[in-house]
Image 1 (cartoon, rainbow, N blue to C red):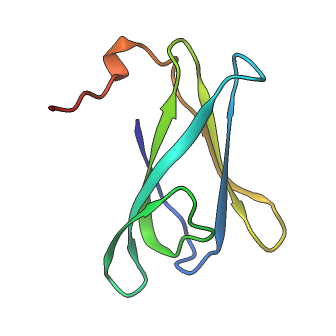
Image 2 (tube, rainbow, N blue to C red; image 1 turned 90 degrees about the horizontal axis):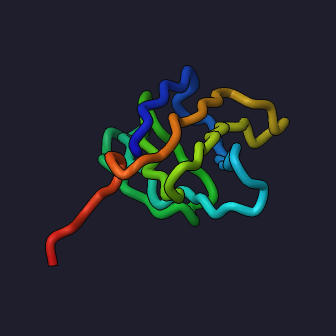
Length: 101
């Protein structure tokens, strides 16, 4: 699933956290982020990147199990306050991504 998020501050240091709403021990994670940085370069970075520096929108590719919902929260690093939060619809087989081998 990809989510387009808009941030008002172009150089905002971000950390992202995800949680599932169905089960406390369910597995879900961010796979990668794609965005245009403040220098105008297109970036695709892994979930392990400690900070993002987007200029405008960015996409988060999420991985989660069937019949789960994922909550994505963007927080400001300085004071850990929530800048944006959203919850996905329940993940179904229609959300599956396949790749050719």
